Length: 122
Image (tube, rainbow, N blue to C red):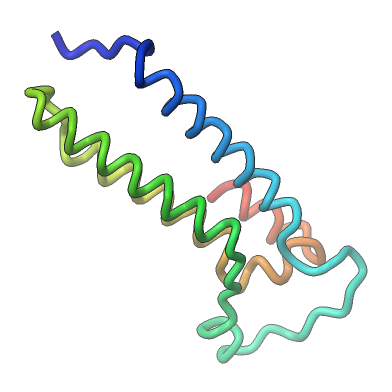
């Protein structure tokens, strides 16, 4: 018990999630200034308030969170034991993606290689 068969109605959901993650990765390639563009010097104000509002990344992160929580609720209602720690780790991963792709460090990812690698590590 507790095994999930990826057939029937679940297969299209898995495909949609895979497509969303692919689009999120493609959206990450469009983020940030163009290579060689002038980037303003980092200041405390920019570090706190310089979050970008990339709609593609934002919508996909929120959609992934909502779909995960709905699926979790459905599984738990069906009697599947689902640890809260697993849900916390998934949502924390979405938060790390948001930090890498929407935070002020995103403005410097094409200028500083160290920032680009930091995004990968997140």
